[in-house]
View 1 (cartoon, rainbow, N blue to C red):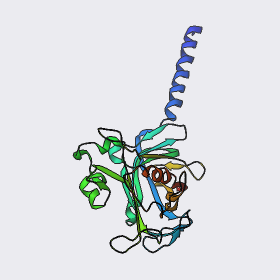
View 2 (view 1 turned 120 degrees about the horizontal axis):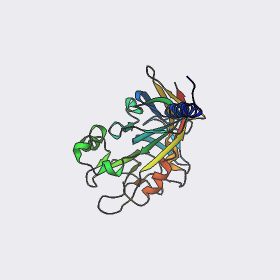
View 3 (view 1 turned 60 degrees about the vertical axis):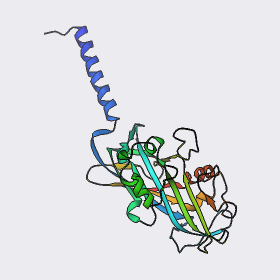
View 4 (view 1 turned 120 degrees about the vertical axis):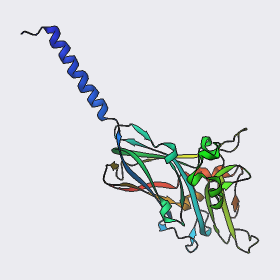
Length: 271
């Protein structure tokens, strides 16, 4: 049986169409098969490991300080694969409270499709939608009662503290306990019924230079980040303890938030 030119053309078009679909699908994350991706937040101070209560460090203003508390919320994690396709981790599985005093909180694990990922994006803080959701939708680290125990929720302001750093410094004023203490409690999601301070920050890190994350079933890929606490004092603004020993819900808090967005860098990836 002879094939007409029309039949041959139709057959070629069909083959080309199938190949194109196959190639297009290969570029997408394999959403049917997921594996564990770990993001590790390794808190440091300059070129030294952060030691709460005992380490003495010097900030960009030349002020000596000791950090006693360092906590921050990480949320809304998403990754971008080698073809530029993004995968957003389901929001209910994407809220973490990193606490330097609790090593087990410093590795945030999520499930993502198997792929090679070249960038990582996350939010420092808690998004406005979740801030205003019914309490039944705010569980785990977002449980307001639990967050108040951790000192990460303002009951008077009905909002989360995104970032908290406390410590002592000779440049800080003496508090009622007799300690020279500084406090930075930074929050503000933009307001519920009227516009207010918005200190939610989004960070995107390029993983390609220090190792992409090759996520596969049966093994855990770990993106190791260094988080330099001293960069909270420098960046777009210079934060002096002597000039601003206590910053909470005030206009100046925007300067602190702009600085802590620069604390994070990708060090390496373990595959």
